[in-house]
Structures are given as C-alpha cells and as structure tokens.
Image (cartoon, rainbow, N blue to C red; front, top):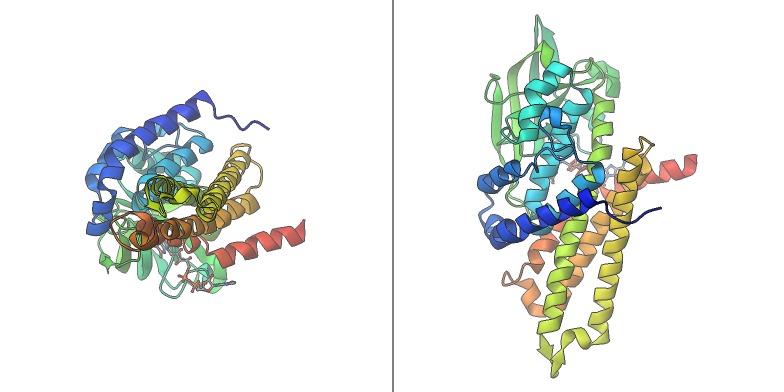
Length: 381
Ligand SMILES: Cc1cc2nc3c(=O)[nH]c(=O)nc-3n(C[C@H](O)[C@H](O)[C@H](O)COP(=O)(O)OP(=O)(O)OC[C@H]3O[C@@H](n4cnc5c(N)ncnc54)[C@H](O)[C@@H]3O)c2cc1C
C-alpha cells in the first residue's frame, strides 16, 4: 500500500490549487451571493483542461487517472462548492455517460466538446416524484420513425439551464419497470420541445444552476440513444457509482476549506488574553476536524484505486461519499462554532462552507440510501 502521490498527481494538485487560490477564492463569496453561473471561471477551467480531467486525450480530455481527477475536484470544491458541482455534473455524470456508453461517433461529436470545455453537460435523471426511487420516473420516450418523442419533466438538474448536452433518462417501455428505462443525448439548442421551467433558490451550492426541465413532444434523432433500449437504469447506476467518488472529493474539499479557515481564526482570535486555539476545547475540535478530513480522503482514494483496477467499487464509492459528506457537514459546523458569533455572519466564509456541505448528503444518493447500499453489501459478504 502506497500513500505517496505520484509526480503527476502532485503536479495536478499544485496546478489546480494555484488556480483556486488566485482565481476562485477571491470571488467565491461573490459567486455565492450573486448565484449566477460563473462563465468566466468555467472558461478558465476549460483552458486548464479541468473540464475533461478523466477522459483520454483522443476525446479532448486530460487523460488523468481517477486519483488525479478526485484531487482536482477536491481543490476546485475547496474554492467553491458550486463550482465543484458544475464540474462534477459535467464530467462524472454527463461526460462519463458518453464515455462509457456512447458509440465512437457519439463520443467524437458530443464527448469531445464537453471534455474540451466548449460545451457544458448535465445529467437529467431525477423527477418531482422520482428521486431515490428512480424506476418510478414518468418521463416517456416513444419511437416515431427515426426519432424518439420525449414527454415529461426533470427536477433539480445541475447545469440544466446552461447545458449544451444533456444525458436524459426516459421510459421507452413504461410497463417494464427499471428495465424499461433508456438514455438519450439531448441538445437543448437544437431539439424542439425542450423547455427550462426555471432554477431553484437553494441553501447553498450557489453558482451552479439547478434547473427544472420540461419536455413537450421533444424530438430526438434515434441515433442519439446511448446504448440499447432498456439499458438506461444500469447505465445510471454505474455512472452514479463513479460520480460518488467525486462527491466525496467535493466533501473533502469543502471540509478542508472549513478547517483551514477555522485554524487561521483560532490562531488570530484572542480571548482571555490568549489565542482561542490555545484553549484545549478548540484545539481538540481542530484535531477531530483534521482526523476526519484525513480519513475521508483515504476512503476517497481507496474507492478511486478500486475503480482504476477495475475491481467492484460499489460499496467503496458509497462509503467514501457517505463518510466524506457527513464529515464535510460536521467539520463545517465546527468551523462555525470556532468562529463564535462571527461564524454565523457573512463576514467569514464559515457559514458558506456549511451550506455547501449539506448538499453532499442529499444528491447522488442520499446518506440513507447509501447506508442501504452498504448494508446490503455487508450482509451479502
Ligand atoms: C442541488 C441539487 C442538485 C441536484 N442535481 C441533480 C442532477 O444533476 N441530476 C439529477 O438527476 N438529480 C439531481 N439532484 C436530485 C437528487 O439526486 C435527489 O434530490 C436525491 O436523489 C433524493 O431524491 P428526493 O429529493 O426525491 O428525495 P426522496 O427520495 O423523496 O427522499 C426523501 C427522504 O427519504 C429518504 N429515503 C428515500 N428512499 C429511502 C429508502 N429506500 N430507504 C431509506 N430512506 C429513504 C431519503 O434518504 C430522504 O431522507 C439534485 C438535487 C439537489 C438538491
């Protein structure tokens, strides 16, 4: 077991970290306040190759291994949780759907612009009545000549209002349960019948638009189906497994930001004629926060390692995501506590980290659903 980062992994950390410190951290509060898609930052990330980190160079990607990708996403999320979601939904979800299940033609036409960052991607699975219970989705796709006609709607779609390419799930056989779900490449600017109903006002994750989408006789060419009819559910589960490693990375990144900020504050703030960091109560908080961050990081890399080795990683990704999500919320909570009253105000970013962290426990499998997944695997072993 080797815990040392390779030269390439260290290089990625340094490059993304410099970008985040110079370009993201100074505007992160503004992005949070304005809640607008940070197009300039996204363009800069595209130039640095950060929108196609895990994809091979032949498809416009950076050709990085999953450890490096997770490290990159951890650093981006350290700067801004919203930016972390933008990159994760674009890459781990939309991009990976195309990479894993697209034909060569589909990859060169739709994955390459995503990986190069000239297009933005989204992944549209959830619906108002179908979140954890994916098979209960009601969006349908009916074959009509050489097209599919899609009707229905999706809710909470990250990047949904700004995406150029959306991997969308619909039922081609509504009677067949999860075996009746298929996936399609949708191009909002080209396909008639695609409507953005609006975007959510959220607790955190600002800057990443979370959209409600409607499809009124949305016509998609039949050659934009990914794989075969009925394969959508399995494709979604496989994609979400990989995605969970990067939500773990988002958790680690936000927790690190909260810890670093709280450490600085503990060194600077004086009460009773001494820095508050010298009170054992505060020092122990920092010790627990750091220990949790390090443990979450190890689980993240363990899941990435198994994915790279092509070993089953369902339980490992679920554990990494579950633990890092809860750690990010706990560490951010203690970060506020260390800041006292200031932590409850917008004078410091501690409260933003807390709002951004909470989302990790909800999307890409809630903590309750992940415990079901892990428990099932434990019982089977
Ligand atoms: C900001 C944001 C961004 C998102 N981005 C995307 C996106 O890009 N694409 C996309 O497709 N979706 C996205 N989602 C949707 C997200 O994946 C769902 O919200 C999530 O899967 C939970 O579904 P739900 O909200 O319907 O909750 P529900 O499934 O209704 O769950 C409600 C509660 O019941 C619990 N529960 C449900 N089923 C079980 C069970 N079997 N056992 C135990 N407890 C259970 C849950 O854990 C939760 O506590 C996003 C959501 C948010 C908030």
